[in-house]
Structure formats: structure tokens, C-alpha cells
Length: 499
Image (tube, rainbow, N blue to C red; front, side, top):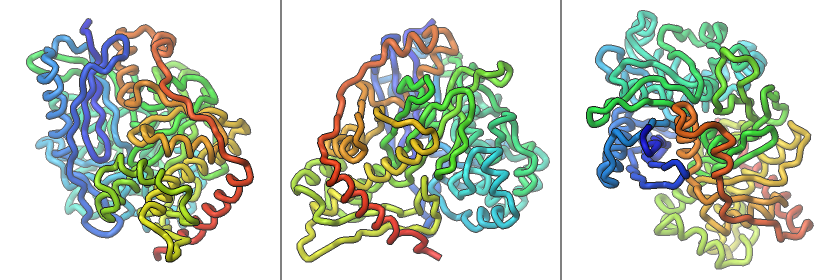
């Protein structure tokens, strides 16, 4: 047994590799950003070869930096940006076109067509999702429609589909393994989360050949091996980034919840062995775990709410508006004013996610006066992240009938003390931030480690989890009520803007 678990964390804007030891300490990490491609308004793409090359490069860089031999790695765990869709030639391994990223809205019309066909209720009940361009199904169909000969070649088994986990595993195993896990399959809008199989009706509606789809397996299992420096290392876990984070936050029991503050914000609550159907704009999804379809009752489900633009609004302030030089500056400038001066920023750059699901919403800044300063807008951007997350909390509480008194947090923006305190204030609840905030990678490491016996079970990894800081509310109830009324008024201004 090796000394370390290697987590490959393939995100929306960068690829990372992190090494964990048996005590869950981070031994080292490496990260590399890659290009974001915007061919048209509302379209977002990645180069799949750059995704793989950047991920492979940081893996090798990390091992070289730390002076660690491949033989010291017990297993590799993979976590990935979800819904992003890649199609490639089975023989050559070359993508047929750029990956269509989860943020991309190009298939909104295709989603509308599915709804007009009367499939909305079937999608909700079968996949647990709401019909939206966010998910992979319509992205696959779009590629098959727009790349010449692609659909026929897919029917013949010449073209393969995969989410990013599938693509990385296929590349790392030199094309030997075409597989995904339940959490990623469940985000395609093609997978029956109850029967744990691809849904024939949805495949037919989108004319997607079943031959191109990967095998679906547990999130914690040995899928194959990667040859690194002449050593065969088991690839022993795969999970979508948000389910990996839920697992990494040790939210193993029903009712435990976490929020990840990354490019977007993603709030998940463990709902146990039974899926909870949302009536408040959330989606039902499969939670990462060690459960397998062959063992009844072992699968775990979650409710999820997704904010499309979370930490990305700070990047927008930095890169497009030039309001700040570094993302970390937002916390400092937000604290230079007592409030936003009545300004609200709704970052609906690619529409609104849960609980609104408005593909045609667009961003807006409202409440500006002659006295509005840059600091007010920066603070409004920071607060927008917490407001959007609160909308998810309240929707989840309505669906489950349970109050979320404590929220475990992670992701890059969770380091922002101003944001975390405002989140506790506006939520009127406790925010718990762990010592290791790289919980997405940690979750992948947990899943891989348990699969190969590096850790015994979830009880052992829970005992090693440590809290860093707790944020508790200090805001008066009347102020909270006024602020929330203004936020929801601003939301109303942004909705149904694009035609």
C-alpha cells in the first residue's frame, strides 16, 4: 500500500492535483489554468485536449516537486466539472469538436422543444432534474446535429460520449476503460436515478445512440489503472465536483448540508437512501458514496441547488470591469463601506439557476445613485453570492421541512471572511469552515482511499475531519428583512430579459 492518495481535481477554469497522506494532510498541490472559449454570446467551450494535457501536467509536476515516486501512490481519485460534454473518436482519441461547458446556453431552444413535447414531467420524475440547457443531454444532441456525420458514426460505436471524468479515465487508461460514475451520469438529463440506468425515452427524444454512452459504476471503485512512471496506479474513484465536496465535508447522514463557493455556488443536502422530489426549484441528484446498484438500499441521494455565477462575479469585477487587481481584494474593498448604499447586483450573466431556472434572465445592477462608488458595487457583488446561496437554503428547507441551522462551506471564496460573515447574517445560521477547504479534492481522495483500503470506512475519515472557523449571525432581524426584500425586487428586474 502506497503512502499517499492523489486527487485530480479538474475544474471549470483550472486543473489541479493534490496529494493527501493518511492523516488527510495536504502534502503538496499543483494547479494550471486553461483557456475559456466564448465563440458567441452565451456559448462557453473548452478544448478537451487542453483539459487532459493540463491535468496530466499538474499531476507530473506535483510528483516531481515533491520528489515522490509513482509507486508511493496508493490510488488516484478524480473529481470534475459536471455536465460539460465531450465527444471523441474511439479509434483516434481526438475530440470531434470543443467540449460544451456546463455554463453554455446554446441549447436553450432544444430544451424548450422537449418541454413542448410534454417531457418536462418525465424529466423531473426520471432524472430528478429540471429541463435546462445546463445538463449534458441536449449538448450531446447539439454536437450530433452540427458535426457532419457524427450521429451515424455514433450509432456505429465510432464516437464516444463522456463527461470530464469519463474523458480523463479513458485517456489515463490509454482508451481501455469507458466508464462514468452515478453522480456524473445523474447530471446528463438522460439517466434514470431510480432504476440506475440510461432512460430509453429521453435517448429517443434526443436521438442519442446508446452505443456512445459509458458504463455507469459506483463513485468508489477501481475502474482501471494509469501507467505513471512505469507503475500501474489504480484509478479508484470518480465523482462530480459537488458530490465529491459533500463527501469531503463528511456529510454522510441525512440532513447534513454543504455549500461550495467556486465559479458557481452549489448547495447540497444529504437526503438519505430515498430521493426527495423538489417542488421549490431544486434538483434531486445521486450523492457520492460507496454504494453500488448491486446492493439495494446503499445508494444515497441529495437535494441540490445551483448558482451559475458565484465566485465568477468577483473574476468579472477583476477582469472585465477592472475594479480590483486581485480577487482577494474584493473582501478588503467591500469592508470600506458600511453597506451597499442601496445597490444590488444580480450576476445572471448566463441566466439564473435554482430556484428560478430562468434561462433568459440577465445580469443587472440596480439602485445606483450619484453617490454610488466602486466600493458599493464591489460589496454588492460580494453580497450577491450570499443572497443567491440563501435562496437555495430556503428552497431546501421548504422541500424537506427541516431547518438548515448549520452549513459547512468550502471552495475558493469561502476564505473570504466578509462573505462568510454576511452569509451567516443573512441566513441567520451558523457557517462552519473546515481546516482543509479543498474538500472537493478531499472527497475524491476519501472515495479512492476507501475503495483500496487506504482508509477503512466513513467513520475513520469523519474522525479526521477538523473545523477551522465558525461564523455566527449578528444582524438584526428587521435589517435582514429589508435587505432580502430589496434582493428579491432586484431579481425581478433581471428575469426574462433576453428573448
